[in-house]
Image (cartoon, rainbow, N blue to C red; front, side, top):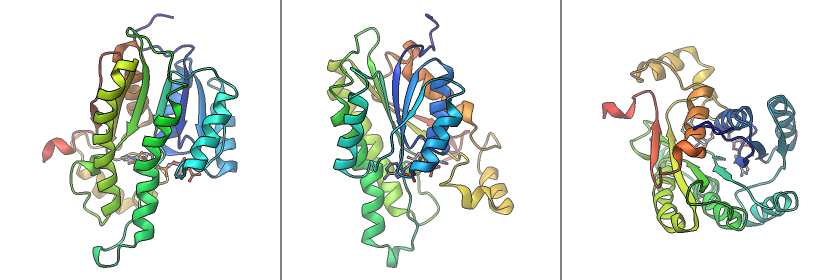
Length: 257
Ligand SMILES: NC(=O)c1ccc[n+]([C@@H]2O[C@H](COP(=O)([O-])OP(=O)(O)OC[C@H]3O[C@@H](n4cnc5c(N)ncnc54)[C@H](OP(=O)(O)O)[C@@H]3O)[C@@H](O)[C@H]2O)c1
């Protein structure tokens, strides 16, 4: 299939693919014809999601903790035992910690930084041998999932999260310019408000959800096709010359500031 937005026959990894945005992108890639490896810590939920997604294509679950180097190495080895190369790496797994500034704990800071920043760097580093089949016409792709909270004040005391997402955006640019010569295209997506486990405190509270949506010019939350469509663009021939950018996907929210 030579369709401009096709990912037919490609092999992809989506970290944090058991839930929310990661599961939405994994589904989009599977529907586009890719084989998709997903990973997360909670094995039961991950296996269940892989089983559910298998109706769209080949989805393989490999559990692991991506916030540690040992977890990343074990996961990459497990993929390498099955694949000679991958075409797409989506560094999506992430976490948040909310606490007032006076009592914000070191534990929360480290937890967020380890999965939102450190993991994205080392996962990319350890996957470099697998990302070696890109060509100048069709480079391998790496996507880092940032957030609009890395661009503006989140409006909640999520200090480590906002700092981590700004770091993720800059890491995207740094990796992109360094890896472009190896035919690896690195880009980022900065999502706005999507329903997920991370945002369930808002989506499960009618009042809070209404309030959050009232801030969005397009007057709705993000939907699975919104994030899947952006990921497909970046992973297909259509995105082959997009390099080192962070696509803001927020229904117009940050355009107001
Ligand atoms: N939802 C939004 O509105 C929004 C907006 C902007 C950016 N984002 C970003 O989108 C990404 C996905 O978040 P989400 O909203 O979809 O949240 P989510 O539903 O909570 O999903 C997070 C995923 O990451 C996995 N994960 C967390 N820590 C991990 C670890 N140490 N090792 C491996 N996997 C881990 C989780 O599985 P386990 O818990 O089983 O490990 C889960 O699969 C994050 O980077 C988040 O910051 C979300």
